[in-house]
Length: 301
Image (cartoon, rainbow, N blue to C red; front, side, top):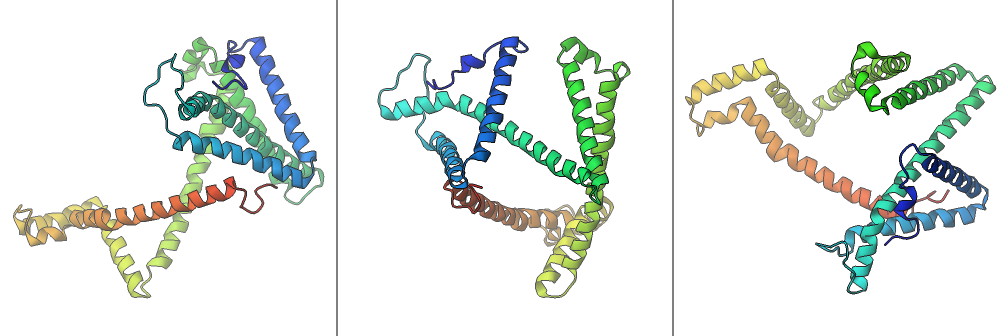
């Protein structure tokens, strides 16, 4: 069993003062460790970060590559060292995952601290873009206030059920809805709409006929676009459908836009995407190994 930090330590009821105290203690301990890490010499800091990264990566590598028991009862004991390691990895996994989530939370907090430090400094120094920094920080604080306030309200099951009706919303819920659904999501949609025009401009530059490859790309894209236009596809497919007299083996069946689209998708697009996915996976594996082994530049800074 994983006895370094028993799960029972965190098993106090949600909302209890004991659990709250332990969470506060853990938060202060984590902040203290991060602060202490910033004060150690650079070379030692690199060694500490590399050691933590290597041990964390080693645990997950062993968990997924070490032989695991197919079936295991609650009272089973390992028969040899291999099963002992397998049992330990299995029992440790949930605790290590919790630590991973906690570290992710600290990373998010570190990002918030970095934003506050940079933009508060800009505002204090009267930077020319201080207005945008003020808008960013004000939006962040407002979103956190209304979202967290609405979250606290929904912790009560009765109140959560009541808030399903928009007529029962209070200022906190209405503020969260205005900021998130009314502003953030709408601005996201507008931003992606703008990006669509940039994609169209890039496609135009890529599809201009300058070479044989560009001509093939243009023809293929045109066929796919036309096949997705319902009216055009129905007319073209109907025309060739009349020539083949509903015979699926007729030669003119190959000229239907839907047939061409399916051929391009099954025989050209899908294999290409699979090849790109394979290459991306190999690249991600290589990058992961470099970070795990401390070979990536700046991995310990």
